[in-house]
Length: 409
Figure 1 (cartoon, rainbow, N blue to C red):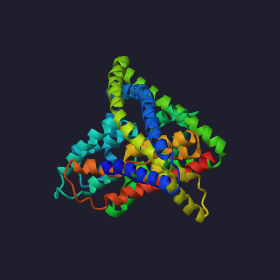
Figure 2: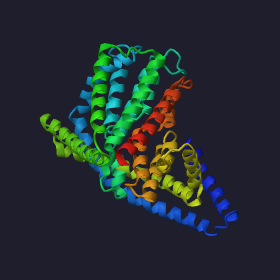
Figure 3: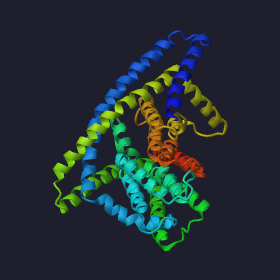
Figure 4: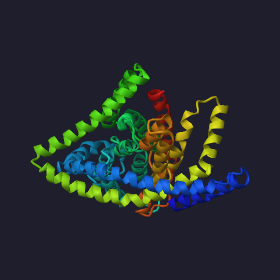
């Protein structure tokens, strides 16, 4: 999928370039396209400078959290809930603990830890599968929730906004939190409806009802605030939550008598390696997307969508952020590149850039997740997984757009 998508970017860009040259008489279009390749390659290296520092810092703190046992404790806390949501999985089965750890790692932004844990969880679920090539109910729920984006601390979004010169990188914290909540609830409810899960189980209600009530009260408070106050609150909470999480990691580690400095250095070394491996992917995607923009192809697609939105009497400010939304189900790298390109083109604190960042932080690479997880255990019949996962994506994108209008206009 990613190979075809990347190749398609170049083909569409070249066709658009020939159209601009032959029919519109823009003889300098190819010079512009070639210059965009060099500009995007330069931008990729500039991004790496921020990636080296930020990922090294964050991986260091996450290592402290792991050494302090916080991830394991969160997994233990959530295990009773997943026992009810996956009734076909026997009580005490190792899959439940691994699933819980996977979601806990995702929620804290531990992507590199979450994926191998998730693959192990999928293999454990496959051990219970009576039809090895067909997805079970538990596997479907696990995949849909994974594809609904569960990250509560979107560190990478803050990092890219900081690199692009945003006045306050954490400004999108609350919009992402609200949008990812809507996306995850849509995924859970759609699967629960099809599988007829007992959401009225006391343990499930003990988790869901307080969460929904708290979210409703929070939304009611937000509804009383002006756009300026909402922006200020999102900035305050984004920075405050991040600092409190770091402080919590440190205090838990000190309580366990863990050498925090040594643990930080150990994790930071891993962050350096991770960030170094991202450069080829950044160069590949940013150059392809820059070529699309320079050729006029991307602007043509957005113009068509903008025309349709105008015909429906809709505000069109969100249209320039849609490339990120359209690419995200297929490729995280492509969506990340489009988000960065949107920030470059319109400015990091422009409305399109804020929407693109919120979409990037509240949706997931659905087809990639399904391909990796199901492919790892040989499942070929996914049943209704794709439909529920895409519904979750759509809800996440629509909520992201609406919330950004609420907060930033």
